Amino acid sequence: MDVTNKAGVISDIETNLADIALVSVLPDKIKVNSLSILENRLFFVGSSKREFSSTEYDSSLFKELTLIYREKGSATRMVMEQFIEKKKITVLKQIELTSNEAVKQALIAGLGYSIMPLIGIRNELRNKELQIIPVKGLPVKSEWRLIWLKQKKLSPVAEAFVEFTKKNKHQAVANHFGWISHKNFKP
Image 1 (cartoon, rainbow, N blue to C red):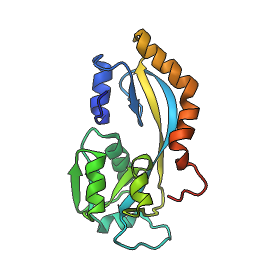
Image 2 (image 1 turned 90 degrees about the vertical axis):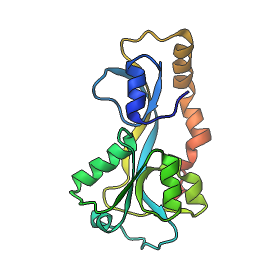
Image 3 (image 1 turned 90 degrees about the horizontal axis):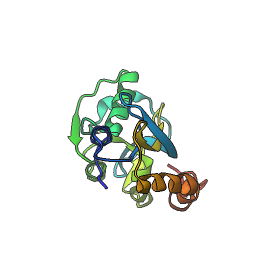
Image 4 (image 1 turned 120 degrees about the vertical axis):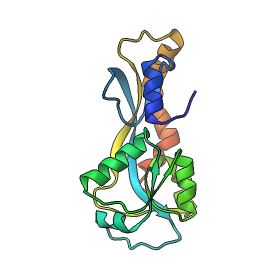
């Protein structure tokens, strides 16, 4: 198992270094089979040390804050850049880090703000280290998916894993990620 950014994952699939990958954004240059697993929602997030009103901000808020990006090749960065481009936001100050964990720690330390997937910040929200700042147009939604090359003949083990995932994904999502859609969870 290797945890890396989207560009690395797609390269590994393309060059047969990996049989199967988990991605939140489908590749556009290679043909893959995919199996939808779980909705992915990305929110604007920052340290809980600064107070924000509970009203929804427009995207001009981004102009006055330091934004923390993932590295080039990251799907999270791609989603963030697409949002910023779509809203025609001018970014004045930015920091770039190479993992969601590094971004989280920088946010907790109060170094800036970022667009992050909800799935990775549950504990920090629960512990009130981070907060979701309501911004019009967010959350951005995608889906976590298993992918593999269309023309690839999967090994028996990889095929069994795909079949097991198809059969058990709903129960696994309910057991481990049910909090995402739970009515008492307030992002």
